[in-house]
Image (cartoon, rainbow, N blue to C red):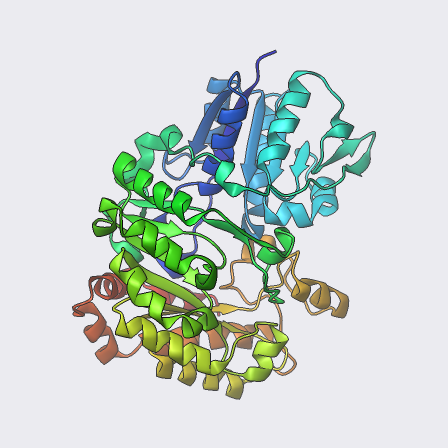
Length: 475
């Protein structure tokens, strides 16, 4: 029987801290492209409930009208329940629909998820492409599910975990994301705070994983504590393809670690040959020490369209950085921010509060540190014990987790107390961080009137979205 698979980006709330934005469902587009390549006989459809403005009732009607044999969805911890509800709706339409979920959260919680959500048939653990194709073919041919590596499922009320699947060694073999499946929605995708409402926003992937092992991060663990990259030529070609084929301008290279030492120069050499370098606004994230050790590459990357770089500064305390297993120094942060400013690149710094030893005084020092660093934008988050992190295991063992509602695991809700601060006090300190950085009238006016178009856009949008007020309501 011919299969038809429906990839679903379910209705969900986006992270209000970043203002109004609507990202393309990049994980599903990457996965759908590979299924399309390897399973030419399978009907493939993607429904993006945000772009299509579908609520849960609208999603149910869509599933009823398209009659898929398989429904697949994916999400982070904060979207756990929306993924489960998607599967529940599919089963409401027809018990015969096979439901599949993937992503980092479900990869680390297969037992818990299969016990809590009977509507889920299969969990794809880890890297999805090969596993999903194998599972589709096995279901089509009524083969042995026990032979499909990388999945978890139920059999006779018992939860089964098949052996893990080896990672793909050559990421260049993966096709470009299947943006043609959501082409009618491309005009709706935007990241208003970063690039304005009418700048076409697209996401691409250049690498997977990270060799560093930060205690609060899920990514390195999910990808086997390895860093695998596409070639610089492949990345540049994909950037060119998204720009020339679909008009993509604000392009997020969504790698967890840019690793300038390994490919910064090569990416510059490839992009400088492309006409699109004058039309794109490239955004990527990297470590502060990566910038500090390769300052010469920042100016070169600015020449080929890099406008925005995000750094995980995290904290001003060397002791806390060691607790986070960050491997960076406070001096790296100053060097990184100065280097970005000198090269007219929008500097985006991330900070984390809520470490076990955090006090009112230590968070006040962090606030002052962040103001002194003077990034163009500062995003503060609460330390969140995501399943799959070292911090989660420690927090669970020691009973530190006070909020088990995954919908609140958005890094804007305080999940844990510290040794001296209650959870509500941590929540209030988060608001004070934003107020300290953005609350100055003088600074706000300067931001709104800035000559830097990105800074001007960001400050105007932050003001219009009442981000400070929304954070205050969480207290």
